[in-house]
Amino acid sequence: MRIGAAASSWSWAAPIAGRRPLAIAFAAAHPLQEMAGSLGDRYLRLLEEAGVLGPGLDLEGEPRVCDAAPYQTDNDEPGVSRIGDADTALDPLSSSGVQAAIQSALRAGPVVNTMLAPSSDKDAASEYWKARRSAQAATHRSWSSDRYAEAYHVHATEFWRVRATPMPPRVENALPATPLPPPDQILALSAAAELVQSPSLIGAQVVRTTFLFHPNLQEAVAFVDGVPLHAVLASMSTLSTALRTDRNLANRMEKALAVLGWLWRNGIVTAGLEAPATARRRS
Image (spheres, rainbow, N blue to C red):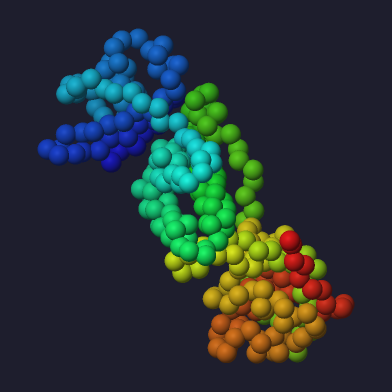
């Protein structure tokens, strides 16, 4: 496959059966309409400008035009859940359509299973589906915006500029290489820690579970290395040493150290200099 960017478009081309090239050009609708020549002439010109095909090729048929703009449906129709492109269309520049379709299907299975199961939390399933689809769309918008910004540095045109509009800055959450506290270190729970009930995928169903919110985390977290954090934080309602906390976390020392290290490096637990806090529960 060859991918190329021009001043006001981008294209890709790849060989198919019989080594014939299949190519798609992406351009804004209004400039495309203003280009001279037939639709076939304009199509070939876009491909040549992007450098994905050489000149002198003959079309086997008239090119087709369709809307490739990303979109997301409201998805609020009672009893209806849309999956894949029926729900969300991604910007083709993200090059993640197949991956996104697989992820959408894998998430939809447990959601549908929960919706159909007797005595299940159908509201939780609906909330989980809406939250994950919105998060996926936001991620792909960010990826596409980054790629458009790279092209804008080369082609400073309106086509690339409007698509490279900066997204809200993402907070990098790489854990610092902070050593674990010594065994006799007194630990205390951060006053900013907050527990909230939110939908989560557990096994083949969506259920509500307790998540940890904290300003140092990009998103709420329920488990670390399979250990439920709400149980860990409940055991830290009193001041404790690092060694005692380790023993309370899990039977396996490796898992205990991993959970304690995650809590320590993210500032969920800190050096205990004051009376301990209790993780707030959000209703």
